[in-house]
Image (cartoon, rainbow, N blue to C red; front, side, top):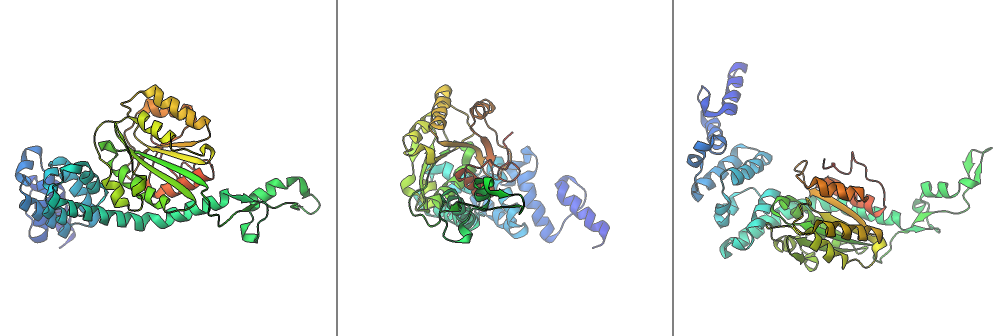
Length: 377
């Protein structure tokens, strides 16, 4: 195929059936799959309709002709644009789709609507996605958090040179600077206390399970399970809408955690914060992570007062407006601004940045905006 023909072929695929020219073979099948999903509203019903076999064939076609990343986008668009949620109740459909975070969110939102015969297929989809996320995120999270815990536990008797915190040692011994030698002679060393087995930090992770937070719920559940595996942390995980569900006892299996959530419904942040206050036993050593878009259906002033009380007691409060890769989230700007005014950071965080965020929180370092998080502005 010469350059002109290739250019015409690409434009034909971009513009769809309204453009001149015909397609053959694999190109024709790709064009048909795109047409069924993205042609005008008046043609959508004719594209896929509500036929499970027809949708299953379409899912097979897009997996054959498009890379996995594109397949996930098209599946997400199909659920949203063509209202295919009902068909996901069929186990045959669940076996045909490409598992991803958005699909898991959709399945969790269906919750108790899933018929018994589709539950095991849905669980298999969630398990596949969870394993992929664990493979991607676990090691980095454990490394970052373990390192931060080691560095935050100081000792004045480091046993090895590798355990000396040279930055803190130099600052602690500046009075011993010898100008003629241009050096500092340390009279005491500051080091990292490694290998501690006792609980050093308490982490309370509360996630808003309203429908708009689906991806955040999935990532938060996986991260909570990873943090719970660390003996130096005492991790609690709470999911909330207008009610509060404490899922801490399920953290041994993130799939169980996710199926313990119930996406959808209203939001009562104040009630969730009140519950989490009772989980804090060591305020100065506690990190409270609130994952929410802050659209409060409960008493707003009470919620803000409770958070102010927690920070005054020494709790390190961080609000994540989203924990996902979906870009700048929608959130309540007034509540975010009110929290920022009392010194509580509120921002959107990507999953890949979360380990660095946790490390910074443990060490009480300032967050690097360019590296650790994407501000939710």
